[in-house]
Picture 1 (spheres, rainbow, N blue to C red):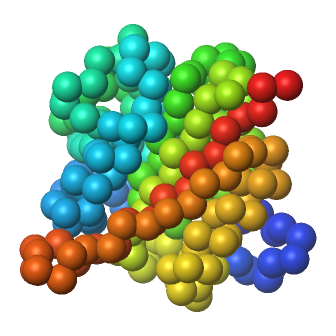
Picture 2 (picture 1 turned 90 degrees about the vertical axis):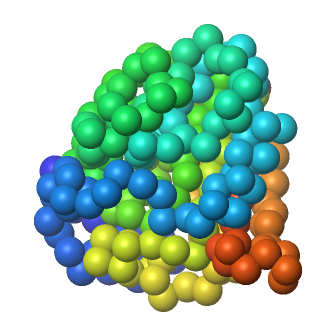
Length: 216
């Protein structure tokens, strides 16, 4: 296992975590569900409705029991990769399941240019080697295909990296954009969905950054 990344322009401890317990053990002890409330989950699904290529091969990274994919969407292949076997088995949309801790092994077990889209929901906060993982995502994406990265303001403090916890939400979006740009992802598009004031059951703002693998 490699140590936390040390990236140019960032503190040497930026991608360290308070709890170094293996992620496979940490998450096996917890309910395999999303920290997002239902309103935020619905917002992510709405984004996927417009951004995911229906009929293609998609990869859900750091997947759990929920992928938030539209129920009516049909895909050729849906691969889920995550640390919790029980959560992956409970996820009904997956056609393939891979148990892997990306902090232990950031190399993805897929061929180059394999996927029409990759989704990463509420996961980047926990990556100690985010640039290595993002470079792997670029490798397995087909040319022109998107990485759709979403997150809310909720996270496991014990497992989130130091820089993520130190930043405000808007700065987290900037961090994600910087990391994605460093890996060569292009056509970056950012946005957020803020809960309506009249819906008290929806409290979590959803932030999104989409980048595409260059066609050439």
